[in-house]
Image (tube, rainbow, N blue to C red; front, side):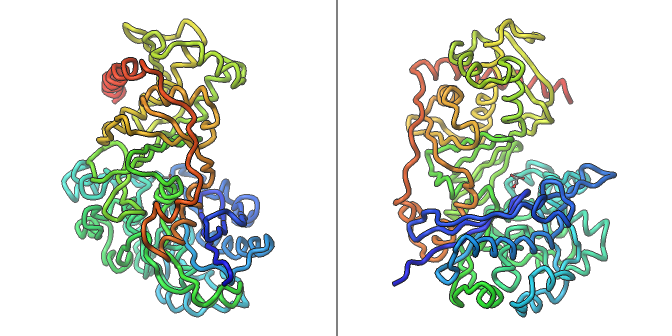
Amino acid sequence: MEERTFLSLDLSTQQLKGVVVSDKLEILNKASVNFHTDLPEFRTHGGVIIDKTNPHYITAPSIMWVKGLDMLLDRLTMEGVDFSKIASVSGSAQQHGSVYWVRGINNTLGNLDSKEFLHVQLATSFALSNSPVWMDSTTTEQCRELEKAVGGPTKLAEITGSRAYERFTGSQIAKIYHNKPDTYNRTERISLVSSFLCSLFLGKIAPIDISDGSGMNLMDIHTKEWNQTLLDACGPDLAEKLGHPVPSNTNLGPISNYFVERYDFKPDCKVIACTGDNPASLMGMRLDKDWIAVSLGTSDTVFLWLSEPTVVLNGHVLCNPIDKDAYMALLCFKNGSMTRERIRNNCCEGSWDTFNHLLDSTPRGNFGHIGLYFDTQEILPFLRGDYRFNKTGPVNKFTSLEVEVRAVIEGQFIAKRAYAEDFGFKFDKDTKILATGGASVNKSILQVLSDVFNAPVFVQEAADSAMLGAAYQAKYGLVGGSYNALLSSLPDPELACQPYSDAAEVYGPMVNRYRSIIKELVKCCK
Ligand code: XUL
């Protein structure tokens, strides 16, 4: 029997990427389409259009994503992919963005001519040509309305896993209904970016999966159904426009004929529900209950596996894409590597070697100094600017470069631990940290991470963890069984460092001190 393979796509902000994996989940082929450089006719910058008069209004042309799909599949063909071996397809996409399909869309999607490009045939299929994306922040008014509809931000967080956020889809849909009622009325179905991608493969509108669906401020994360009060607060007949949410590993049926005829997929190749990039990353990193994943990139993110949902006003609880009865916590910190690089440039003339040397030569706890550095408006905590403290109180400047270097790294990790604890994550002897992202190659930084969390740090080659997670989902959705057993042939993460024996003693009190400092600062800055 010929070996079967699996295909997954990741429709991220800047590019559309695709990967084919073997039955053992090893990467066989990859390709990508960069929206800015490969599709310049859409005039995006980094895949998005920032409105000239309102920089908070950020969208992407839906048809550009459609055109990207044919381009990507052609590139995979050039890479030697034999689509007839693909047993199932799945995907991940940037979260929160919304796509507005015109009436009659199922008829169009179900009757595509394989001799024509998709973007030619779907040119008039969108009631709104530019999809609002996660970077948009124009819906503050609608956010307050949504919170009011259910009795305040805490109540909304209790129901949906998050207080109202501008980028979440509910307030975005409400804005379209209020500002463009004609567009709303011409819309038969609304997809998330992930379910939009899935719809193209399926040849009909695909359901929204519960993990990405929990990033909309519309779904009750306990029942996994839409909350009618919230739907009504956004627009009429919204339940019909959204369709019924499904578990993330749902096998939705065979691939559309368009792909069978144009690319030689087998008619029984299956389409598995697509999900958001953060849930897909959780799958790609193979996170389990005792693990906490820390991704160190442009923005730093922290993922936790949650057995029960917690109510928090800082951060998000999403439905878990692997186990539909579990949850995941997502924490986003906007000031990650850029801020680390600023301090490196100021203190070490741009050299990581010097930075690491200074970091290694200062003691854990930094002589009681704490530094908080927020180059841009931070989400957690809601602050901007630099704040420095010695043992007794605020100071304008630290006395040495090494103190500043240790302060930026300790401050960032103490914040992550404090917010993870707020989620109810208990650090104990079984806790393990999985570090990913650009800065996870830096052992000196990882040692501080290990000490602050008092837990061993492991590393894994997790570039493209969202796309790999979706590839694992393609197989998992097809064959079922235990997710961990399915992935057992993949290499385990490697141990990078262990905490020093005094770590708990040093950082326990520092986390408490951090909490009181933040409380005061947030009060002052209000
Ligand atoms: C998460 C979020 C981003 C996008 C990026 O809430 O807004 O991480 O998913 O693709």
